[in-house]
Image (spheres, rainbow, N blue to C red):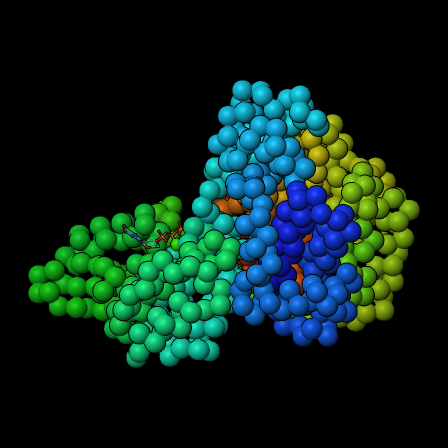
Length: 575
Ligand code: DGT
Ligand code: CA
Ligand code: ZN
């Protein structure tokens, strides 16, 4: 799916045009096009000019630009424009919450040309007094900078995986590869990725290297060798490709999948057994004989271990568990029977109830819960009490008519800043289930934020706490809560914790999931989909769940419909 990428470029173009003081209509046209492309269900990369022209706000000029970008991986107009913008501007614009007007102001009045400059001025309180800049703005800027520094050089997996998939499918089409897989942190499904490590085998490595460095999305070639090359994509993501020999493919795959810490433990185990393990194979130290290496499973078998799934190779206890034969049986995407957090056009989603049901059916689900926003969330077209009751009736009506998929009536009720919910119990009790979440007041104290979640969980109608820490990877940190307290309350009250599968959220994250598993609470993996392709985010959620050692038995939406309902009623009964 190239749409988010194209949308981001159009938005950046609008930023630069705005700074240059260009025609506001033109600027708005780019922003509107960006919004519409981002909301599309079809990939613009697969659309011909004629189809592109049907997208609202896309004329021949923008259609041409989209074609140029998706076919060549480059947009000449954008590259030229970037050269005309003040130096360092793109960096400054990358600070969350800092728009083009402010960036230009900083450049003109204070000659701020880099994030370092910006940080110094903000720390010294020297931005205040410029039009529109208050103490609060300065604080936000500093927070944004800290965020960028923490994430520097790492990308959210949701931005990296589509690139890796593109490269792999291109290489398959155009070069003589046999094995071809992404290893490294991508194969372990870490939430952020520094670079892509691809591994392959081939009868003609030189040809594979040639094709690789000439891929349209290769903006820069860092190195080209006989069996290893590195490129950087237009988005700044580094990709390393290695061609290894067939008979060491398995050991290379284990080595380059990592993690580093896991590899070290594996090597230590090998040494104790008189073995040597590296990317070329598994060897008997005494005789020098090669014992295996063609298949990844050789590594584990020869060490006398069960196969350890890539997602948990972090030296977080998996080696001990493998040695004692108590590895978890990780939840699988096939185990998921439905999605319990989905938005319709009753609030800010794109689809009607009927459409949602069709999409879910196509994915083979047994049920979904429609959980639109509550009234407090004006920005997301939150529903009034009348609207939600109306929706509830419509859902019941649908279920009577439909023999197949089941819709659960639900809501994503806002947890207000004082910890109360946006609807009274009298309304919540009429719904099949309730998802509760925080959307405001992120900067409250740890005690206040924890208190809000705890009081929401104590409400008998609250089934699930959605995206419990509120983080947006690369944009907003998790808010400060006492997770031990939250998990303890979840257990006591029988409240389910969400693993939000949106690739910018992945919230709870792997670490907290593992903690939750150890606390013995139930979890749900939900996409929070607002449009059909987002149902596909489920895999990100399941992989993250696996990183947290989650098993099927701990996941609410692996249950059949009746058992699931029983679970929900249990909490309501134990009030
Ligand atoms: P990242 O930072 O998201 O790219 O994470 P990884 O795990 O992909 O790290 P990367 O790309 O530096 O290396 C890929 C794998 O190669 C890593 O997981 C383990 C292996 N590896 C690389 N260098 C070393 C090393 O010096 N020692 C060991 N034991 N393994 C290494
Ligand atoms: Ca890597
Ligand atoms: Zn939501």
